[in-house]
Image (tube, rainbow, N blue to C red):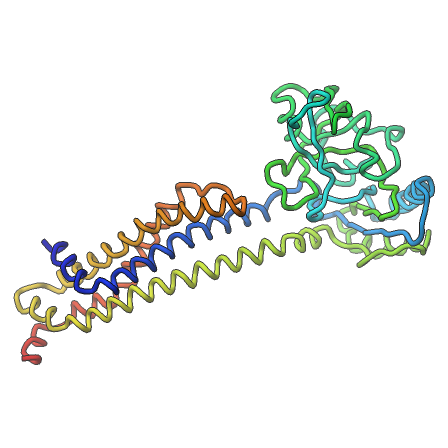
Length: 406
């Protein structure tokens, strides 16, 4: 009986009711997808790289002038020998990149047969030598490390068809399921390579990679090419700051015809800088969610307060006819529940439609169904909290208000 009375009263205020329902629906659709995006960004930021991040130092090195591959290779060998002899350095190697370096990486198409049209898996490559596993703190779970005689000098493009490679366990499982990948042949851009080792975990260089984020390939080569390279060092415990001071000085003492932008940098700082955009998006989305929820709560509370002011005489009549404060309170809470439910029903549909739009145009993943009931429950609770103050004021209206208005 009370619900019929509420619906009849709402029909008298169609415009205001419809506006609140639409506000709730839009809030639910936007907040639902925004929270999903926030969760994805936070998971992206928290992805483990698989390396000893706390002790890694990175130096970007750019040679001045033109040099042949043989000259660059000799300079790399001299630099690495000097870096490894520094008191605080556990090990060092050279690469064209490093884990989670940024948007660019050498994309590899890995197949199991020559002339395979569609790759079995995509991967991203690192240039590595026999010191790379030790420097990064990688754990070899099968096979062996590179030998010094297997390392060649050249650009990453020159190293795309090596006789032997080391892969991550994720890539090995994609290629050979539960079989051992060691001594198996694969094809990188239709050129054969044999897997000699498998490391437990190593994230790819490109930060935006998702579907094959841990499918890394170590290519036995030095980055002896004119566009520069990165020296990656692992400091001994407690020696990170000392290594950051000593390493650039040691390199300049060998050859000053180089540019080291920013000097030595902590890997943790470089990783934090790469994820700055993700943290910014997370903060922005969180602020949007808070503003929308506050606006919706304010809209519900404001509308209820307005209706309480308009219905004071009706409330007084009901109180005079025997309605208790609890009856008045339940009336407004039920009215709010019906309005919010209408907005939630429409909002759930809009949330799915918005997610489909984002999936099509922005490569967002499908929204998990668990987000829908959770968001609906939150809005129901917020709706009840928003209406509580005006409903308590309505319940406090005394029956004598009828006589004052006669």
